Length: 167
Image (cartoon, rainbow, N blue to C red; front, side, top):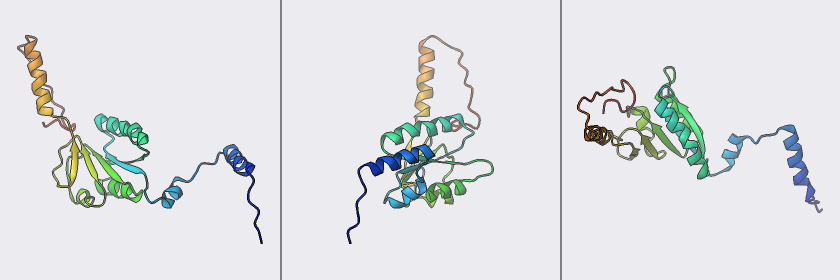
């Protein structure tokens, strides 16, 4: 028995009705169909403006490469292990770790599972890449510039507990 095929108008009508009903595809179901999730996980602490700015800057860069971003925030009531587990549960293909000041067991169990890049800190574990500014050179260049302008009394105001402040 021959099964009749859908007409050329059928997909157009289905899309029109879906739009009228406000239908949105189920992202998790779509990810299960694919071999790759196309998700980048970003682990950060929302209390530091620098980390929030980095997390926000990841969105357009990821989108340009065909990736979506999943955020994993560490808060006083949500530790590193919970945030990492959530990012991995979304099948994140790689993790961008912003400003984390330690690499403990929860961090170490990522290694070999997904690529990891640390931003704002030098990695201390083999297999982890890092992106950070050269704070010492930046401070030296700033002081040299001020001295070059003729300033003799220069004060430094530290960053307290902010990432990179100890450098």
